[in-house]
Image (cartoon, rainbow, N blue to C red; front, side):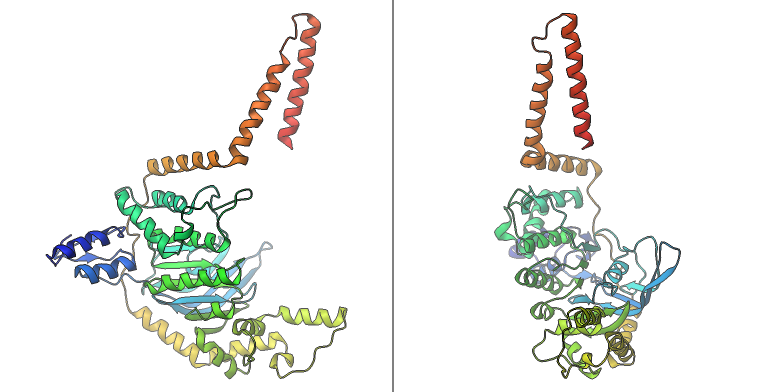
Amino acid sequence: MRNSSSDPSATAAAATVMMEIEASKPAGNGMVVGGLSPLSETLWRERTNTEFVGDVSARLTWKDLTVMVTLGNGETQNVLEGLTGYAEPGSLTALMGPSGSGKSTLLDALSSRLAANAFLSGSILLNGRKTKLSFGTAAYVTQDDNLIGTLTVRETISYSARLRLPDKMPWSEKRALIESTIVEMGLQDCADTVIGNWHLRGISGGEKRRVSIALEILMRPRLLFLDEPTSGLDSASAFFVTQTLRGLSRDGRTVIASIHQPSSEVFELFDRLYLLSGGKTVYFGQASDAYEFFAQAGFPCPALRNPSDHFLRCVNADFDKVKATLKGSMKLRFDASEDPLDKITTAEAIRTLVDYYRTSQYCYAARQKVDEISKVKGTVLDAGGSQASFPMQAFTLTKRSFVNMSRDFGYYWLRLVIYIVVTICIGTIYFNVGTSYNSILVIKKKERKFVTFEISLNIL
């Protein structure tokens, strides 16, 4: 790679930034083809005066998206119906709706993770192209944190780096990438603290969620999907996690997260809102404009109510069932109020909102923006490097397994004690038993009882 500047300070800066680059592709005339993290790109431009070829950001669009699943009895059911929307770099998009609304299905459809019994129609374009998401281009963070409790935060990320990053990448660069990821996710204070498990106290739930996100952004993906990242967290941890996601999006990534019922503080961190109910679009647009949309549709948000609670109250039919149950079984009375939802059923409110959105300026603007983005054929994103080789993966997994077992008292040391006790029990069967015929019969009886005990123990 050639740099356009001959200043020694610029050369030193370039060497520093190089530590953060996971896969650069040299080209002629001192140019560098895309494939770097957003942070690395910015630093290269600012500190080394080196230009980049192509736009390596991710612009995702979906138009008339319908997902149909085959049920166990052979019948089919539409889970999503005619959804249209987009997600751009630098934005944090929330997929919100009540349980069963289809937000997780939409997330799976956009990330190419639909189940085998699901059939998709419509178009999903990445940078204006029908592209299959490759390793390193996009990342998906599941709702559950699958972490090894005996490892520290830094060790967890380090092992993941050895498993995912290519062998040709020097360890010094991998280590720099690990440390920058820890800083980026705000994990400096707990970097050397164990994750924790049932008998080992470790980091908090919010920190575990940020570790899970850190593992996925190691490859510096342009597109990040998250399935309910704030589920099971307290309000402070949920805010911290969402604030971290907002920071990731501001680095040029496209971040899409499904979320169930955020607090008002968390809701304000999202740039765009995609509200679903029954697989249909209730609203898509700027999150801050949702207040005005619901007011125009005849369902204004009360002054002292959390906006996200109000939006979900309007599209969640379970509220009608709860009210009916309380009125019938407990004979409770609900005072009359100005709330329009007290005068109609939730099903009618959903139909009103869905129909109003289809003819609103928000739907028109969304479709116009989708068509505009789809016409621009952007860069075909690649993985920016291959995975680690099989020998490296096997060595890393073996080492990690031994470290885990040596630190896990319940898995390793307790079993070692049990094996020693069993060995002593077996050995004492033959201690001073004699050599007569009756002694041999006694030995055989003891052996049969011991074998029966072991079989019963294994079955249980």
